[in-house]
Each structure stands twice: as C-alpha cells, then as structure tokens.
Amino acid sequence: MICKMFIKPELGKLGLLLCLCLILWGSPAEPKDAPADQKQEYYSPHLEATISCRGVGRPLVTEFLILPDLKNHVKSFKDKTVLDIGTGTGIIGLYAAKLGAKKVVATDIEEAAIECTQENAQRLNLSHVVDARYVPPADTSAYAVIKPEETFDFIMSAPPYQLVLDNLKSDQGPTIEDLGFTIVRGLEKHLKPGGMAILFYRSFLYHEVLVKFARYMGYEVEHSTPPALCLNEAEALLNYYLAGVLKTQNIPSEAFKFDFEEERRLKVHFLFFKKGDSSALTEHHNGFIIIRRKPEQKLSAKI
Ligand SMILES: C[S@@+](CC[C@H](N)C(=O)[O-])C[C@H]1O[C@@H](n2cnc3c(N)ncnc32)[C@H](O)[C@@H]1O
View: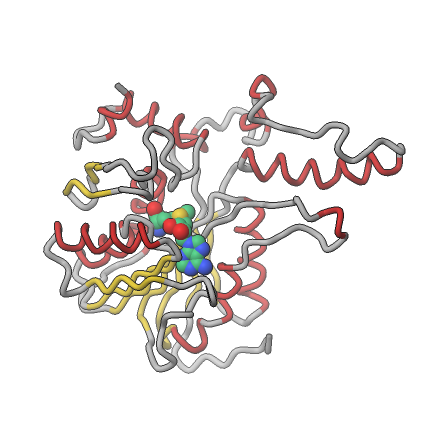
C-alpha cells in the first residue's frame, strides 16, 4: 500500500509524510521490500519517468531530500560536465543530464548499480550523455576510474556513511568510510577552476568532519548540517564509549551494548532533534556541503 503511494507522481501530503517515516528507518539504497535480484521499478517525479532500481533499492532520500536541494543550489547544468560518484540508480547524474549537462560520468562499486544506470539512461534517451563506469575492488578511491586529465564542472556524491566499530578491540579506532575524504583530496586535480563539488550526507558526524576537512584543504565551503543524528551513528558512537566504560568496570566487552533496532522504544531519533522543531523532520533532514574551487585558487593544505 505504502509502496504504491511512492510510485504515483502526484504525492499528497500524507504520502510524503509516510515516505519520510520510512526513510527514517531505512537507508536510501537498501531495498527493504524485495529481494535484491527482483525487478524493481520506481516513478521518479524529478526525472518524470519510471526507473529501474533492480538490485539497488529505491532512491527515496535522494528523490525527496537531495534533489530539491540540488535544484536550489545549482543555477544551471546546461552544457556542463558532471561526475556522480556512487550513482546507485543513477538518479543524481540522470537529473543533471535531464537538465542539460553535456556529459555525465557515473561511477559505482556495484555492478547492479551500473546496469541500472545504463538501463535508466536508455529509458530517458540520455545514453549519449551518461557514461556509467564500474569501480573494481582493487581500487575504490573516488577517482579510480577517472582518467588523470578528466575534469568536471560539478562533482557530486551522496557517499556512504556507515559507522563500523567492530574492530575496536584491535585498538585501531573505528573503521571509517573514506570515500568523502578521497573525493575532497582529488578536487584539485578533477574539479575545474570555478567548479563546484556537492556532497550529501544524512550523517551528522561525516557531514561535519568533511566540512572541516574541505576548509582545512583551503576550499570555500557553504553547508547545511543535517539536523539529526542518524540512529546507526548514535548507536555506534555510544557503543564506542560504552566499551571504555565496561573496561573500567571489569565487565566483558560483549556483555551488553546498545541496539536501537531492538530498542525502538527509546525513540532516539526524536531525542536528537531540536525540541519542538518538527520542520527538521519534514523539510531539512538531509545535509548538503558545497565546495567551491575559485578560479586561480591556490590551496594551502598539502595532504
Ligand atoms: C547512499 S548510496 C547513494 C546512491 C545514489 N547516488 C542516490 O543518491 O540514490 C551510495 C552509493 O555509493 C556506492 N559506493 C560505495 N562506495 C563507493 C566507492 N568507493 N566508489 C563508488 N561508489 C561507491 C554504493 O554502491 C551506493 O550505490
């Protein structure tokens, strides 16, 4: 029933609310309601087309929280070149192509995502614009399949942000998602002077860290912080601290930990919203980071 509401172009307010509730409990690229190999389709109001999401999942967060921001911040894609890193269904790159980009390179580490993007480009008659490239496991850094001389007017990504703390016992600190870092590190080489990189994080932690990192690298940054901690990052950070607490009390580290999937009664999402600010839920849940490379910009940091 809920799924049917998503695929209708004329979403009512109720549909949007239900959609946002679902988004809060799931990642944008994780199909919750069908096996990965089952054909999935989805009507995208921004693309004005039904797209394939087979093996990738429906891009609901991107559709309802990211593309409206993109529309607000990019005056025109006309005749521009675009790199969409971690493309999923291809939705961000396809949107830029639909708005007039002359070339879009879309990359992903999942073969299913590349197949989806190619199929969707065909459906939108944009195959001549969109070049979908598979990133093999040997090197998954942001520009692994980009030629050294390739540069872009826009570099965009909704990078993964999972916090994985399973290796805490090794004392090496948390496993990190470093795609965002490699995107920023490579801007000097692949973002045209005067160009713009846009990162979309729902994660408060990665968002704030990447804003600081881009500034440290010498870029001008404009951003809007996601107004809530994601459930999984709250859980991971609390467990990281809890491990230290247990150690001081001589309690085995595996004795107990936070598991907010199990403990939904805690309603943690709402604890982290600004009190009384329901607009955070309905209007501004996703963050965006705009990194500008000024023409003739010399960067100060050297890492
Ligand atoms: C949060 S999803 C975003 C998907 C799509 N851009 C959207 O907005 O719906 C992140 C995507 O990045 C891909 N990904 C993860 N690590 C990557 C890497 N190192 N290089 C390229 N893509 C990657 C994942 O397979 C996934 O499709």
